[in-house]
Amino acid sequence: MNTLGKNFVFTSFGESHGRAVGGVLDGVPAGVRIDLDRIREALDKRAGRFEAKGDETIRRGAGVSPRAKREADEVEWLSGVLDGVTLGTPIAFIIRNADARSEDYDWLKDNYRPGHADRTYQEKYGIRDHRGGGRASARETASRVVAGAVAQQLLAEKNIQISAQLIQVGNETNPDNFAQYIADIQQQGDSIGGIVECIITGLPVGLGEPIFDKLQSHLAYAMLSINACKGFEYGSGFEGVGLKGSEMYLSNDPQLISGGIAGGISDGNPIVFRCVFKPTATNRKTLSTLNSQPLKLLEPLKPLEQPLGLKVGRHDACIAVRAVAVVEAMAALVLQDFLTALNS
Image 1 (tube, rainbow, N blue to C red):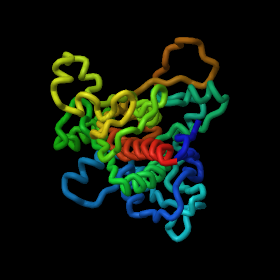
Image 2: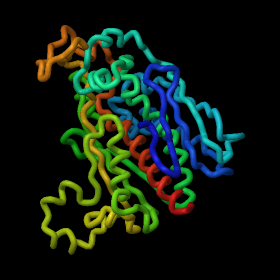
Image 3: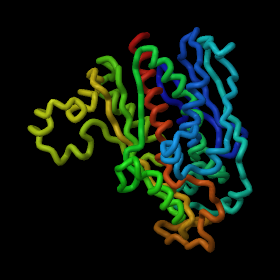
Image 4: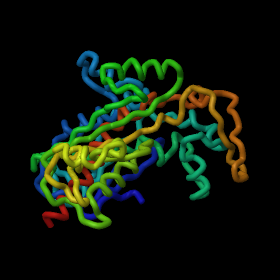
């Protein structure tokens, strides 16, 4: 499905190399002035475009694909907004794809890339858009960021803030070393994964509905829908398994004990969660692939004559860099959905 939320509802559409990606956002109240600068900042963060601010710019934009930096990402509002103010009706918008190079992907009509959704889309639907991964491309997340930026503005009116940051790249945990680490990986023609941490402050007690609508369940659902996200944890997470109960619950550390959620309900403390992103599947190393002829179970992969990255080569060295903006957007959509239900 391509729709998220029950009361504050977002629907995403579009393919990587189609005319545009876009979305429909329903449940935004009337009379809200949309801060276009905030939306532009969120899209620039996702695309790796930053104003010159010394090493910070280099670090946050390291390893970002050329296409992401060149796409203008201009939002066209189709409905629901008049003179920058919401009408209370469904908000529809598009972002045109300006820098697509579909011919780069012609050879993928008959080949499946490892680590991508090429084969599963073909097997499930009997047809797929081979151009840049089509619907499975991270290009689709641009529309999530627009919708999430609108939700963040609504949350900010209630003093709820969402802030995500990259806290680990590969085995490197010092942010001052991220830029060089990613640059070295990119120079090798390879890619690397990372961890994004998100902190939510100002959230009231009471968001979340036991037993199957727990707040952390919805956050995990949203985060794991992001391309390349392979894991979600909150509070003490996986590291907590090494702690004794006395060490955890007598620590007086609310982030360690609950991560801001208890029994599936927000407890008023800051919510802290982390998402793990895998290395970008396409790189300049020699990989293997399968062709689209009928396949036998466990048929061995066949080496490519040329490295994937040389034939299709506009990819992030570390996709977690740009995932920061998408994590913030998805968190905002989930929280605004719960708040809309609470106030209805």
